[in-house]
Length: 117
Image (cartoon, rainbow, N blue to C red; front, side, top):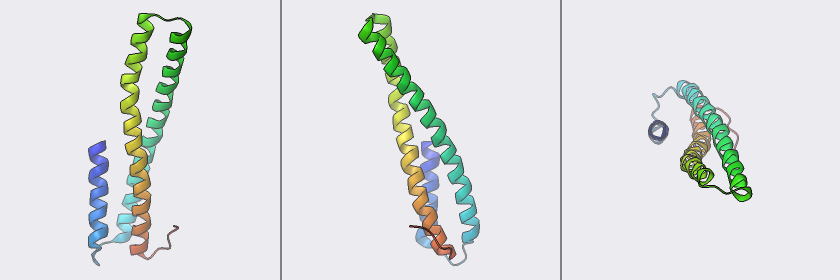
């Protein structure tokens, strides 16, 4: 997903930099909205998963504090190993979607559509 997001952002940046008169900005705008919807959906799913893993981590930490055992400590570490990449991926998704909002505003300007800033 990371590669797909970065490739798509670079593709739109290239279109915006060249802003060729032959570019059908309405088609670019429509496709950009479609891609933005995909990435926003992915962001929502990863937010839900990340929050659930964080809640599990807090629950296991509570168990460790109240009743320490090696097994629970191992569980804590395993969840942490999964939680860190989820947070990093969500960070990428969130920042990428925010950047795509800015791209969308620039596409609207080039298409001659009033954009909110």
